[in-house]
Image (cartoon, rainbow, N blue to C red; front, side, top):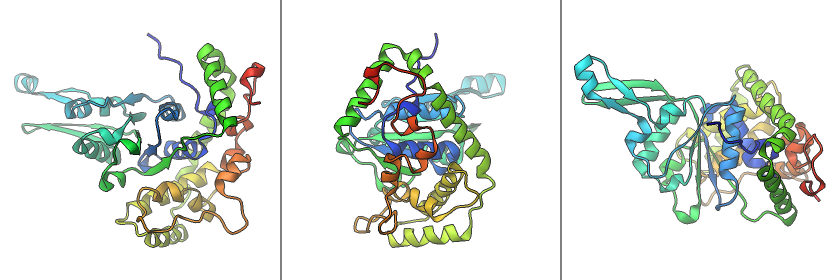
Length: 332
């Protein structure tokens, strides 16, 4: 049975902040994944599935909401260990997600111990299963994407902090965006293969940009100047612990690689500031000022096609695909 055709990430309308955060985690999975907050019906799973393609067609695995710890980490067959002298391991969700994306919908509704275990493995890249003195270890390197609707319950601050980046989706798109979203969704539902063919070139460009950025990443230093900018901002925001500093620094380096830079510039630090601080900032601390007075904000740049997404083909910032599509499927 063939895999269902997935809606291409390049064809998703708007959601520029989230698309950027997902691309950065595809460039450097050590950032620690992305927590997406927002109401239902905001294409969170569509965006997450699109990320798997940027990782080189890696697996996309969903953790069921009612999953047990054994379903997550896998199980050991003790009878086989006693009778044959070796442990027989039955892989769980973590093993299945190795090399791809692990998607957890409504992560705030999972039991806290399960979330804690999940985040531990995501950070270490290794899953270790132990039972009655017998253990098994395997690689579990994946990009963790969690979604949650804050109206249905919050995550404890300790667990929030374990997610690398945090992005909130706006639940009320403008009428023009809503029309474009509906048109593209209808076009995809009518003929998924044709729709994906129309967007194949744009999706290939996005995949290649992420691949090139991954190759460039190791050559960009985590330098003292960037670290100074970040630590000062974390201190001013009243952030507990040091995870924010490290995540922010890694994300800034990934952003430098994303824009084909050779070193971390202040623009890279600013571009990812809210992603790193949103879920860690003290309640009474001011939000980061992303731009100097009189300069357009990153969001305005993206909407105008002049920011980081503007370096891609026009269709990645809301324009039409490269091939001709019916007039009704185009933006009015």
